[in-house]
Image (cartoon, rainbow, N blue to C red; front, side):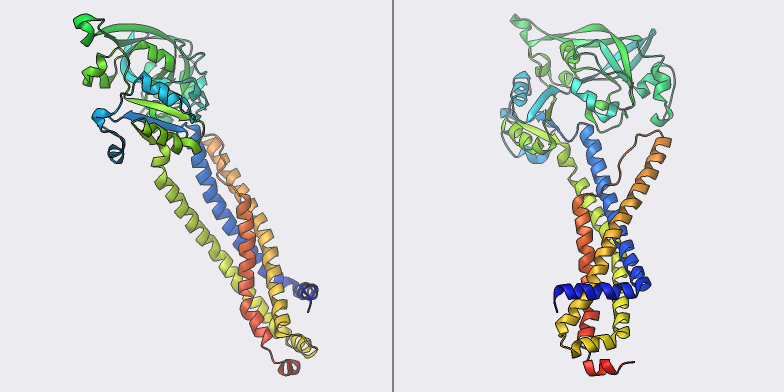
Length: 453
């Protein structure tokens, strides 16, 4: 029997029992829909986490520390490369070498210090950090009121909302209790005075190994209030007041680590505790880390810390796929039941086919064609149904997020490979489900089949 004849007979047989075959195909569709919906949810959540981390400036960032600082990020790195005593200083020379690497876009020191600010003649103590202009694209400034810095050395400041509320005399234990729009209005455009300690090294003679600390004042204009969490993992964002990176570098403010190490404090050249190297893409982080390690420094990146996160999503996708496949397995039982019933109803037809020369393979192929057709149709409608379910979940979730004051997010994604895998899985499961009915139909004795009433 030719393939065309098998397909034509299979299509005719499927049309004869429309209701039963439609219900079986619907069962397959529901199984495929559950599989697609669950896996697309897992993929969407993983992509959401990746997007948020990448927009936060974490996936394309390498934090560099000196081996001389025994508080290393990783003890394993201490066994590689030069010993701490022979390792280079993390100074401007090292910064220039790191910035010259082909993978690195910019390298800047992670500068922060505690200082006193006066706003409306009232003192406030807080942590201050520098931010490069490239931080403007970070998701941390999505809900910011006002604007970002006008220049890389502008005498401007951005406040975190908790500190902004403190300046206005409002107390809140939970950041979610503070409305950024309400507190930004009275503050934007106002001035505050930053009081800090400037380190000044000795100039020649016996004073070359000494330094002095000079009290300085710097007027700053408030240009923005950001909705940032002070306990976030975003590095500099743990501070509550931000000024341009070049401005904080030119201030030569006394750092906490300099007070612990007199060799740093007395140096004419700034020596940093950590540097932040921003690379051109997440895919180049590993090569950038290796190049920086060859220069004699320790490195840390969020990719090192997200190994467990990627493992979690892999396990999540596995379990979602298993649960989604259970519904498809149940649907496969429906295929077996439908085809077994078809054998009982068409015994005489099968007997006639074998009597006129149809082989066991022809009969088996006919039932395989029917099972495959139900699998393909069920897969197509299942993918469409899963897509609709996913869109509905995504739509409802975004309504909830907007009502809670958050921005819209895509938590659901159906890549092309998932569509192809779902269709192929549905087809294979259908063929496997047709093995027993097809084998049973092929073994029918044509004489006994023709006698069947």
